[in-house]
Image (cartoon, rainbow, N blue to C red; front, side, top):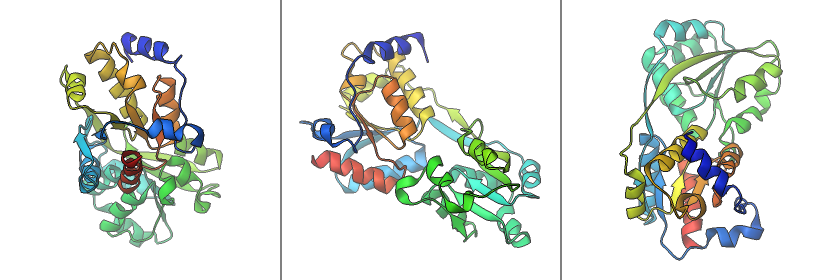
Length: 289
């Protein structure tokens, strides 16, 4: 984070913070707005368009601005080598499935050769991506727990002692799942099937969003949150602290909520899921309040 961003965060941190949707004492204050909801969607392109389509059906104004794109990372040999002795395969995103499969159509063959392998997805969209390429037996957490913690709470991952686990993810992903499984006795390897390529946004991007009267931002990962705070700090004077104190931030997990508040964001709502449907339903509640 830039020096300017850190300064903004320190200055705003003194402002009283508001709890998430679960904290009813402040809920009405947090949701009340005299202006129509205008949403900025920052998740990757395909997912952003999916959410935008749902919001359009509800007449909720929205703007899509992905902060990064995906490109292939792991080699075919690396992918196949990791799979030879895997007992459990975990996919943390749709991109992890698509890029791994594009590298080599190994998944269905792997299932045929080792029918006792267990396939896990971090959420329903990732599960559907696996099913689309022929993996029909996939375990995933329920809709309100589509995140790492929800995955780790599944009963099938409670006893993994001496199991060989392969986690499919992007490069430099979070270590939370691996660390927990290692503590449970598993032997964990990664296949980093894709990497993020961060976009360079226009220098006046924050001014453009203000002109569009953006008053709600959807954040689906901690990396996106940190990158966006950096952009906002470096492209505008932000003299009225609009983004920190007036804009509503919709996040998808406790971890991101905690990070957002630590950065000085005071209007934070936690949907507890990255599902486009649940995000849309949460935004509907906000727009109708």
